[in-house]
Image (cartoon, rainbow, N blue to C red):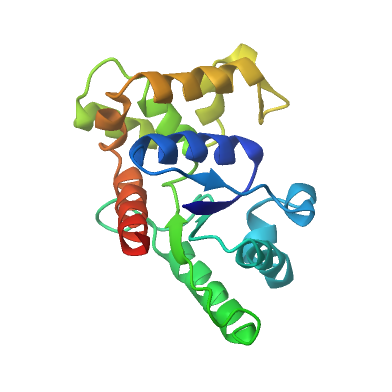
Length: 211
C-alpha cells in the first residue's frame, strides 16, 4: 500500500504517518517522500488557493502510483456541522482534486487512487492534546476543542517546547509519536473527537476498497 500525505508541515505528516501505521498494522505501508515542490512550499493557502501548487503535489503522487492520497488542511475559522466536523474545506478539496483528474485524465488513465481528506477541527495539535488526557471521558476530552488556536501548541507540548509561537521542539514531537506507537488506548481518546472519527472512517474505507 503506497500512501501520499499532503500536509501543511512536517509535524502533521509525521503524526499522520504514525497514526495510519498503527490503524492499519496488518498491511505493509510505504509512505512516499515529498516532492521538492512540497518541501519548499507549504501552508493552507498553498494547498487551497494555489491550484498549480496542489496540482504539482498530486502529479508527484500519481507519478509514484500511490494507492491513497491524504490531504490534511487545518479547518480553522470554518463553520462546523452538528457532529463537530467542518465540511467546507472538504468540498473545496474535492473540487480541486476533481479538476486535477479532469485536466490530467490522458496522463493517468489507469491510475485512480482513493482520496482521504483529513480535516481536523482546527489543527492536529488538538488530536495530540487528547492523547495526554488522564481519563477516557469523551465529554471532558471534547472540551479541549474550546482551547483557543493561539494557545493550543503551548497547551499540547508545553511552553518551553514551542519556539516563535509555532515551531515545536523535536523531542516533544517524538514523545507524542512514541505514545501513539506504544499505547493502544490513545485511540479511545482520539475517537472522542468527531474530526478523528471522520478521518479514521475515510481511511479505513479507502484502504478496504484498495485491497
